[in-house]
Length: 332
Ligand code: KG4
Ligand code: ZN
Image (cartoon, rainbow, N blue to C red):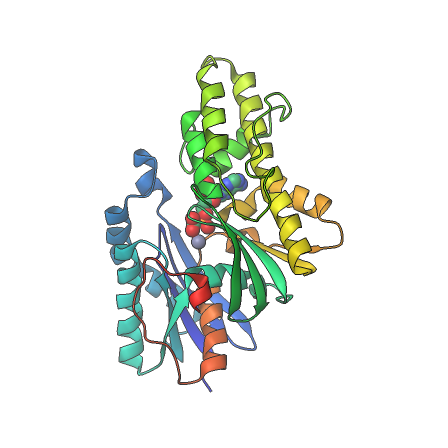
């Protein structure tokens, strides 16, 4: 019985490895964030990301073995998309080499499915559920009917929620990654001071669009004096509230439309405190589930877990492992 799965994650700017054992849970994980490498450029540089994954994976692999006391697994699961092509190829080559050397199955994992299944690392997955996936690259609402049965309900027409946070932070001159920095500044501000638009709330449907909000924010920011710290905090707070209220309202509509009683929130933006508070306060009759903060952002534990789930379901009939920078969840 193949019970122990090694997970490999390298789709963007985090390098991660983890051992997950079916029936036992997470055995050990290691994670390295490249944030400092990309910070001087104000965003992820794909070529630098791929190169650092190459350097980092062997070091992390040694560290994982030391921490866990384990030296091999019964299967290897790797993120094969969506993500940065060079970064994905590094992880896939590393995973393929280990699987080949050990003579064990190689399991291809969709990165977003990893995020969706992350709550399973700490508890149960309450299906059917609506999932809100909000990260630097994605803003999606998904109907999760069963494992592997995912329907896209809404998507962003322009920027992802995390990207909007990052761009607004950059306009205010805050350091990268902007989301946490903007949220920290917002804590000191009055969110009612600047009335910013709540995008797409006047229209039916579950799609998002954040470019109008970003433009309104920019126009307001350009009027501020750099030394006026209180106004900058007020503007950050007003922006955060507008974005969070939009996300919460779309979640409410998605729950109403599907009749589901559970909401799963995943992706880096789910770490946002105001979003967590508002979702819990405003969605009456629904239970809101968050993965732990550690497993909300990119990690290999969720990839190993997703691999274990696939292995249990598919046995030997695993799909071929090829990287796909663009890959819709609905194709699973
Ligand atoms: O899921 P993630 O770690 O990486 C991917 O994009 O796949 O998400 C990163 C995003 C960034 O845009 C970051 O600014 C945002 O999540 N983020 C936050 C917070 N923490 C991270 N946005 C708002 N508030 C936060 N506390
Ligand atoms: Zn992610």
